[in-house]
Image 1 (spheres, rainbow, N blue to C red):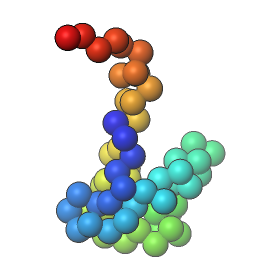
Image 2 (image 1 turned 135 degrees about the vertical axis):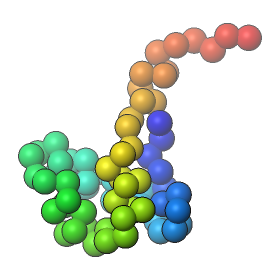
Image 3 (image 1 turned 90 degrees about the vertical axis):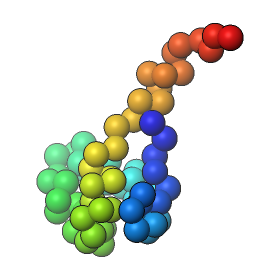
Length: 66
């Protein structure tokens, strides 16, 4: 869906970190190491970034009914 702006559990701002995280992971870096270097130490924040799936482009293909 849409990139989470804040951690759902603790409220720490995460939106500004997602693009950097995604770019570095797609380049082949280990996700845990990237999160460590970005300063994301809480497990709730790490979960939020690592578990995020971008589906918005897939959903925009369908027309809205009703």
